[in-house]
Length: 298
Image (cartoon, rainbow, N blue to C red; front, side, top):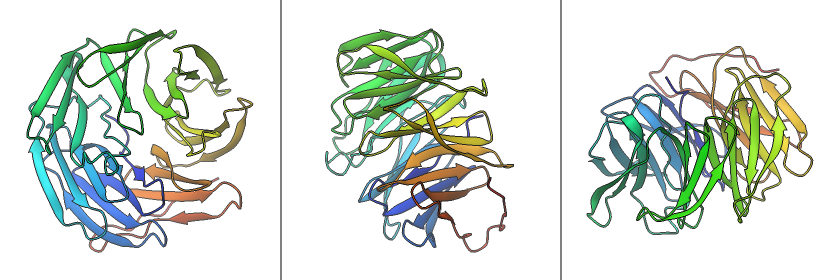
């Protein structure tokens, strides 16, 4: 079962947590609850743009809402069930690209589906075999797919392959980083440049498997989940660990917001945002009607 999907809008507008079928949206400034909605199935991915919050569930339903008041766009079947272990991703620049409903999902047996609600095109599928994770470039021009056999395929939405990069093991998470991509393989993080060359950034000293990699807006830092309980921040210039945040609770996804703010999702529908310069830690307030959880951070 994947960790709880989590998103922190890059400009700090909203924080999005999830718990089973619920999407829980908070104000990015003061962390207060804004609104919540439920999906037909368990949520497998969320994303936030300056205008919209989008979500995808394990049944293949894709939904989007206006992030300020939660007014609905639509809920659209992606045409296929999404595997519980698969990672799904929705573009981080959807509003700028006028694709408020673009969705990318990985289903059983490595089927990658594209669903475009705004064009009425329905879903398109690619059969890749053992696809495990996916990421989208900020300008919506390229999609990168990580395969279990250690390959990253970079291509266009029509299926045309732009690059194929070989890594030493199953690719567990991917993200865009200025001019290229970051990928995790076991306890290692790799950088893939615009020419398709791969270089090792970090081998985590704990030996724990890495996942949910993300990069800061300026491309200087990366953050990644190490094992089940630690969020690690890495300098991409030096490849050294800059900070680590350990929890007794399970860490879900990690996501950079504005400047040096890092969002950390937690199992159970909660989240922290941490200022990497001042050390300030803020937590999301509990939505009315939900159980209030407490936790410690070291």
